[in-house]
Amino acid sequence: MAINRTSSHGEWSSRTAFILAATGSAVGLGNIWKFPYITGENGGGAFVLIYILCVIFIGIPIMLAEVYLGKRGRLNPIASIKYISEKENRSRNWQVIGLIGILAGILILSYYAVIAGWTMAYSVRTAFGTLNNIDAVGAATMFENLISDPERLLAWHTIFMIITTVVVARGVKSGLESAVVRLMPALLVLLLALVIFSSIEGKFYDGLRFMLYPDFSQVTWKTVLIAMGQAFFSLSLGMGALMVYGSYLSSDISIPQTCVIIALLDTIVALLAGLAIFPIVLSSGLEMTQGPGLIFQTLTVAFATMPGGQLFGTLFFILLIFAAWTSSISLIEPMIIWLIEKYNITRIRAATIAATFAWLIGIGTILSFNIGAEIKIFNMTIFELLDYLTSNILLPMGGIMITIFVGWLVAKENIDVELEIKSNILRFIWYFSARIIAPIAVIFVMLNALGLNLNIFS
Ligand code: PHE
Image (cartoon, rainbow, N blue to C red; front, top):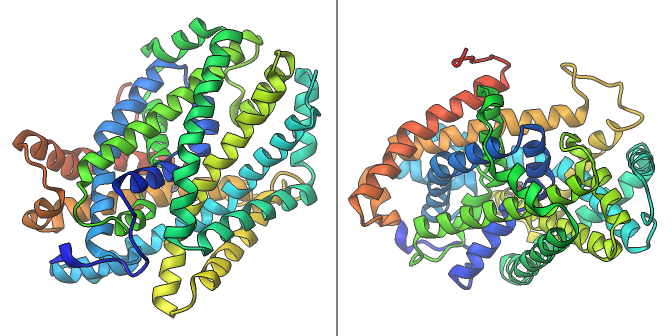
């Protein structure tokens, strides 16, 4: 029985450690950089509401399924699924889920590290006062200057990748766990401080209203699909990150409760990020629809013009580095344990190989902002292509296979043993979501990603 298997890579020292680590994976650039800007682009309240519904009805069921696979398999994503499919007398081909996940993780990390590098650059600039008194035009120029300088981007990208590698090379117990146990609470405190700052200095009521008042007149299926894709990315679903973290979970810990807590924390951080950012954007008379440059351009203007902005700006960017860092650790971990188990190499060596791989691909992203901007594949720059391939194809594909595999192909008794959902109603909701709602919803994301417009509303 799966219950007695343990991971050869060690286990979390406590349930709290797992929750912190998984939350560290979930909370990242997706919450603090992406959530505010796509909420801004998609009209605010209605988008936030749909996002939350997606987290509840799609995200949580898939998360349960993914953590379940890891906790039962106790190996790297490929081997875990192979092991479970053998036990369940199912085709071993399902292990392709693990392969897609490992690939997706490395591809996401390759550009994630570049954006995290921007954050590092901005934290240094803010700390040294370079951004003091800057205006909107100056901020735009400064951002342009940064992204158009491949050498500087490469330097930051490299530094970020080295930090990630050093932590993961030290292993789960001494590296990952001690890092996140300290970082996650600090991150929450900093974010709360920023919200308080924002409520004093910014147009807090207007920001709150923008985020919470749902105006459905702008909502299309596309909005729903974007919200769902964001739920996927933000909860770190569909690529084996939570499967790996689940494999370090000791057998006495309840999966459903833990997953609900993680999803809740992730959503709270995204909402807090919005609460911190929107009031400042509004009080500075800046644009909600700024796009990916929102925090790098708009917010620096806001910080520059506000009293205490240098300190809070610095703290904000440092917070974002921490968040990106704990996410990147989980992006690289599936490949690392796969390398260790498959090729029997040391953790340090596996971490170095995986990071080098991601680092090399990341150069493509760096160049796509400057000298390689003209290189287009399917009409996309290398960065856009990587983002498209991972967010719109690989993660949803992984997610749908995970939910179908667990929902339909694993024997119910075996799931019930691990999940231990006592209430009949909750068990029904779980099976209904995992078998029906989540797979169908994810198919919509996939079709959207393929460019098919499902205009059911019109
Ligand atoms: N969830 C992370 C974020 O919001 C990104 C991520 C995606 C991490 C997939 C791991 C796996 O930034």
